[in-house]
Length: 69
Image 1 (cartoon, rainbow, N blue to C red):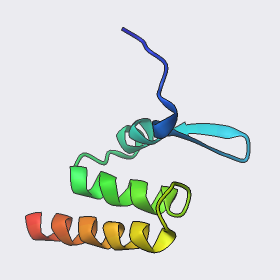
Image 2 (cartoon, one colour):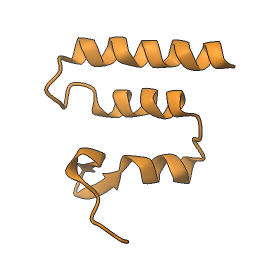
Image 3 (cartoon, rainbow, N blue to C red):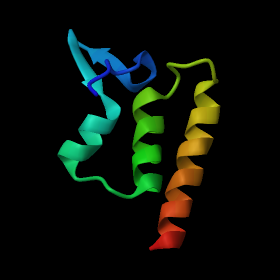
Image 4 (cartoon, helix red, strand yellow):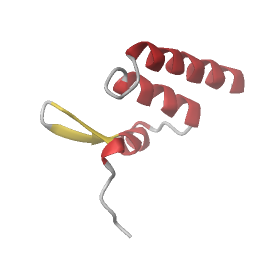
């Protein structure tokens, strides 16, 4: 089944549309906490949450990734 990628997973930069999960696959990112932190950095301030909340959630995800290592 090839359904279109939902908008919440896509963003555009200089006319190019990206799919976050496809980017993780290309970069070889397999750890969920690492992927979550990357998503937070890329999308920081571009959602309904304040940018400071995105930063805090990025830090939390990176701390969790470090704990799991």
